[in-house]
Amino acid sequence: MGSKKKKAVRVIFLLAAGIFILYGMTRGETAIVLNKAVNLCLECIGLG
Image (cartoon, rainbow, N blue to C red; front, side, top):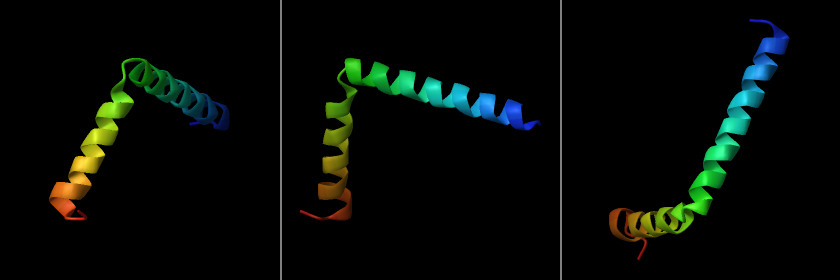
């Protein structure tokens, strides 16, 4: 795979990741993910 192809693939994946992050933010998924992270720390790991 050439250098230009690798760079193009990286840019495409970076743009796709950014689009999915923005989509999740508009749906309010950030609060859900934060809530799950807090529950994981408090219940499973026992930091509470």
